[in-house]
Image 1 (spheres, helix red, strand yellow):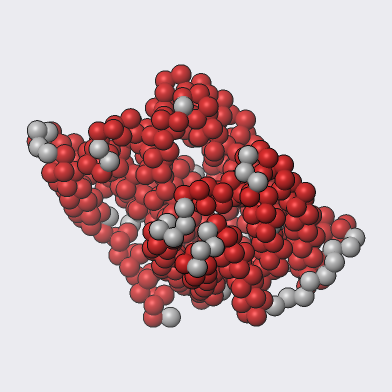
Image 2 (image 1 turned 90 degrees about the vertical axis):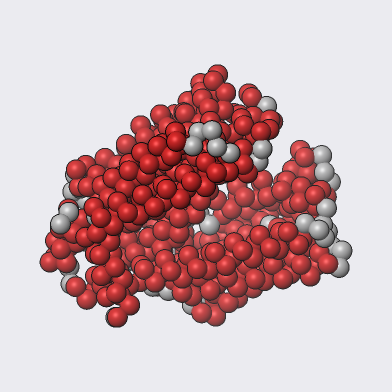
Length: 500
């Protein structure tokens, strides 16, 4: 059997089997609940958006979007990383947790009053006076989200994934119902504003009833130096991530124009959003799981290899299959006028293949309190990637997309080296964890290329359908024949968790 099963056996010899299986169960149950609720929430979002779009004007969405440009950025900073600090620093005292909750409220109050002061300049910037009132009302969500920090973080730390998933679902339901109700009676953009603020308020009340914890004024911050420093590292990391994540859109729009930005945005959305949803699902559950074994390096290594293998099983064929069928997919789904999106879509799909498996690495650094190294990685990415995007723009949207393919692996090598040293993991072990998905995807690529050559003269719909069917069938067949031991190992793990 492969290195993956050897790794599992080694960890089971060095860690109590009962606790290991209990944590495995929490991880799988968390993924199931979180994934299920997120799909329900997504369907609700799609349906409500279609209905609300008939009740409010495009300009109403535009006003909300203008306000959210500012609010979305501040939301990255408002929590100050306190929720993650509480999840990861398991040695915090009750008093420290209470004062961290107070610090969260103090930071929220600062940004609330700052937003009130900036509301008029923001409205003047966009040339829309109505944005002022929208920003002021939306700023109330800073206060409710600050009160939500403690209960959410404590539920997360206690691996209460079912309750967290239900909380997200109830918040989405409330937002959907309130939006529809107020839009139906003619509130326009205020329907969007009220539902956003109201859903946060109700979610906060529910979370506090499930996991209440007292809040104390932070007072003397010297005893909170460690948690505050960690929170600062997380805030800087998030801001840097947000900045380099959106730098390519800014450069394409500024240098290449709105048409190029439209095709590039479509390519990015189609290539990365489905993969990001899978990675985000794991990222929602993984931090608390890693935190539970943060002092057990073999267990962390086990989860690194297992989660990487599972992610690759899903993301490798999806991303590379998308790259192979991009031409037919764009023509069939959107038409000839979107042909400019084909090349960036192909290149970004290749990038998504690599990116998808690296999304859990920052969580390991945070769980092991190496937040400064994680911050350094984000700052290096911020310094390097925008320059590459600017250089790549000389070759159009394809050049900007290719900058991700070239630059991201170079930058991310920093975090790979740190995690590998931290967990005593070799590159060979990591590559062997990727072997099943790699071999299955390689066979899939060969099969799709053959199909495309054989039916090159066929209608794009026929080529696309045959490519998908043959590619998926080949991938499943190769995985089952060549790596049945790994499939059976995962099935065995799921059966044991179900039985427990």
